[in-house]
Length: 317
Figure 1 (cartoon, rainbow, N blue to C red):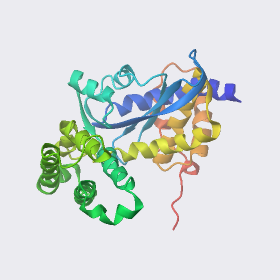
Figure 2: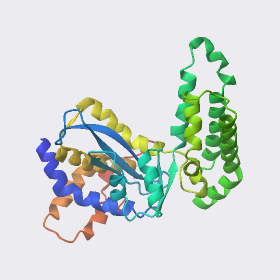
Figure 3: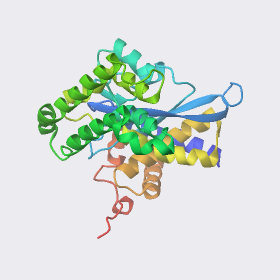
Figure 4: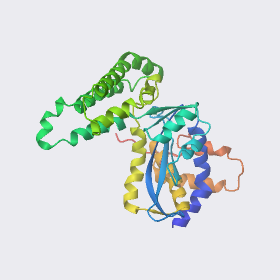
């Protein structure tokens, strides 16, 4: 069965994947993340970590959502550099050193870092408080940081239904002052040594201050999200499943998994029944098996008007 999936993916799904990749690179905003996965036969010692990378169209592109997975053995910068070759725009991600390297070396891509990742340090600092001290949490630096970040989220969330241009304009008036006030306060916390070094709170302070440019980047646009939660949601099903099947046997199996998850998650994100869509897609691709011209592919993509109604998820009334 695994061999059937591998051969089917290579023969019928890969052309669709490559077309989706071409289209993804035309967006102005791409969000990305990665998660470890174990591949048992990849030429390395047992228990070596491999990675499933995920790239998706920006959160505010709701009409034609693209979610693509890519298997790689490592987390090296060469992988996203190769995948994003030809992309001009903003990449939303966490503050992993690979993205900082790309930010320095690639003038075509601006990087925006995820505020939800930075927020977690302060949330963890409060969770680490002994139970008998949690009633005093409101007086801590971590609590104030969370309050300030929540204020930014609250204001930015109110702009979610606006157009890109109007959201940009409103961000300058309503969100930028809150973000700049947060950074001014964080610098004061650091400079006046208001919290001890080494703790979660100080790690959160430094995480923000060491990447100020990237955390402010979303303010320069109207279509860059405040965080990378949409990408983490795209990874959620894969992460849930890997706790069931534990590992992937071969590299070919890992690549096939990336193709299948890409097609399925993209279909779901565009309101399609993944089983029915795969059935339609495979049937159509078999009809074009000998074709060398792939111009027909656009008619098979999840948002095409050629998709039969049986593939579409009917909304409940």
